Length: 295
Image (cartoon, rainbow, N blue to C red; front, side, top):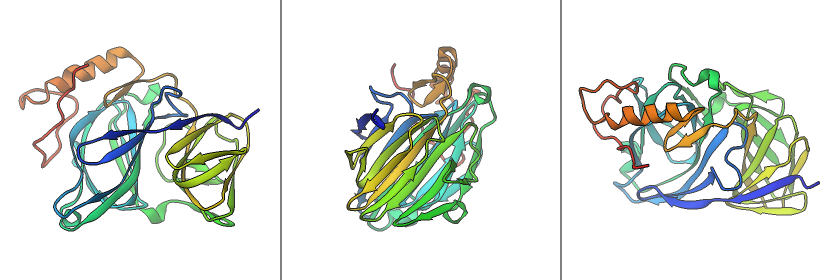
């Protein structure tokens, strides 16, 4: 039996001045463990004065995870959080019953030419936590466990792997790591998590005789220990964990029922009315927002 169930090749999407490669959801796989959305941003080069401006927008029923290799973002949300994120840090935002946030390139970074490169993911919440109060955590790079192997370094971003556990407050069994492999290195990935995938950010790896190139994600068979070989070096994301049912993903909303999605859509459609009472709250210092798209 092959160690690989299938390979996903990301589709490129323009998000207003910078491109992302979207891996999940895909036609082949809606989710891997609790991960229902994976975007590989950049690497993008910006001129002085330009940058990323993701206007305030809502979420329910998920946690967002931002992890950067290059650049900086400024996160603001309706809890009043204002937090810069630098390469290697983790921003973990639990939307729960509803939150609004924005992500922008900070002014100091925007003033000069700069690059942005990273991975953004959504983790579906177990049904018991869908209506939890929204929350935000920031974990600096130095607080994340690092595991050294011959020719390989693994950082545990969220959940547990390689005998170490991240300080991020996950709500279900989760695998989320980044790994750097030198030329000729090999990394053994245990079968401890129910579902697993390997995304190649840079370089290429060989898994069970198949070469997985940059920009591709290999979804692995369950219960099989896998060895990742990097002939010329690679940067990887390892992700997965236990599935959380069959969540519905619609625009920025994730939920276990269509009714929850429809209620969130209706409330966000009234967000432009300053007098409207909506569960999401408002982001201090922000006057813009992303309107509800047509179905």
